[in-house]
Image: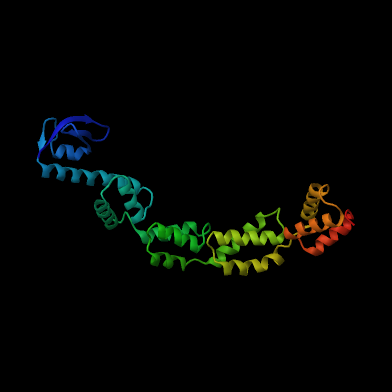
Length: 258
């Protein structure tokens, strides 16, 4: 059965062509010219579907090239084209063509991604993200091996630890550890660096201890009395990471609950 053009409208790029008052297609200019389309023209079924296939290839090739202005993995570009309505087999074919022309390179993508993200994400997170993007694990492993994680973490641990100015040393060390583990960095390397942090960056916790004491005392002095209040505040301060020796000394100095 033939397909007859019943309406044509010029678009900014291409033409909106209606067949049999029912089937509407956006036709690329090259295809429009090649098939000499015009109102009233009838196309054989095979010619009609051949035209649409050629049109799709031109259309989705253009979309792919635009998308490739930002680096993509093969999987990302395939998913994008399919999401835009491209037939899966055509999407695979186009991606393979882009790869042959070196517009796509998953190995290079892995190298650049790791180089950019190594100070923000640890190996575990980087690996998970790249696998999600369809990158071969062998490429990921190849470039992760080249990263000096101890050097990177030596900087990150110090920076993060020093950002916790309103925490006790114990809290700061634990928060630093948890933060970097969540970022995907190696637990054993983090722990080995943190061991030296306490001696390398000692803290005068007395001002913070006094502030925490005053806050707790003012909040609970009317709710608890005597020994109960004293024990309660000591427990809370200890849970915050203050040393019991320092807490005891503060209570003696304050002489509030003696």
